[in-house]
Length: 436
Image 1: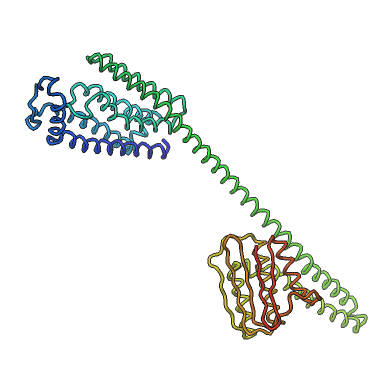
Image 2: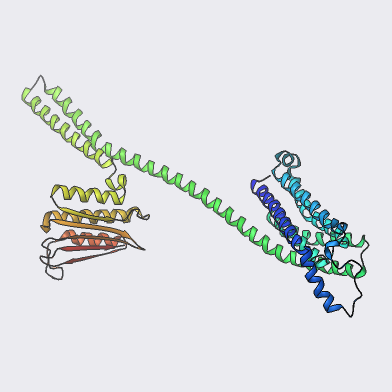
């Protein structure tokens, strides 16, 4: 049996027991002698001239104890059934034995027990505010609503309608085979019909919600499976591309260098006994080719290693490059990097990092500043502010300045869907503002 269904049954059992405890506390208050005395006095004043005096004593304290026997039986019977219901929901052995019949049996218990107990005890229930047929219907209604929710949770709409009609028919049958007064029969029938109609309406709504919830869960499971498959495929594709790139790098560096070196050494071997000078020249060329091959191999290996951005993340990568520049050029540094930053796409992170590198490069080479600051934050959009106290330049001048790095920074920002603004005045420093 599904774990979710078992949890729902346990919740239903706890609701049933909680409702019985609440009803018991209410009946203790309603059947309190002082409460009955106040109600009795009000009724006697209103009906003193029309109704004969009651057969029972006016003082409720001397009311015979056996009048409350149906009340005790009501709570005892309902309590035993509710506790049994709770016990079965935790009893794994009986769940395994009954298998697919366990859930229908539990619904049968919670839906029939309140009706049977209600029909058998109503005629003998002690007089009180909730002792009428309407009051007894209210006593059983919450439990039957729980049963309706159990049906709507596990089964289809047709089963919900069948449950609503079946509970009404069960009550009809019990009414017809019990000696009720004529007026009570029609009251019970009317209540059962209203309840059946209400159950069908509410059951349709609950079933629609449950169906929609299950469809959404199924959709999420499928999306999760597709995402897992996509991630696996992407990982395999990435590995394949990296292998191909590595193969190309090795082919273009190590393989070419070794091939050229092999041919040069073979030629030197052929000239060794013929022309010693030519042999020496070929060996020198081989040494040069070996050195170049080593340099190219180192370059390829360096390119294969991850950059600081990939290793550390955007915030720490910016911090590292800024602190390195401040240390090398003896500059004061002020950092304000939001931690943590929200997720940014790799292209956006690359753009922010490269613009930061270029701005720091300009500060150390051209600005003549002795301090600079970097602020990075995200509040709906990412904002990068880099400011120095250097010599600055006239940013409003239309004459060519030769600052091709600034042009490249603006182009990078536009490609990433952002904008770059440069504020600068002579002898007042420079401020770079990037917004994406």
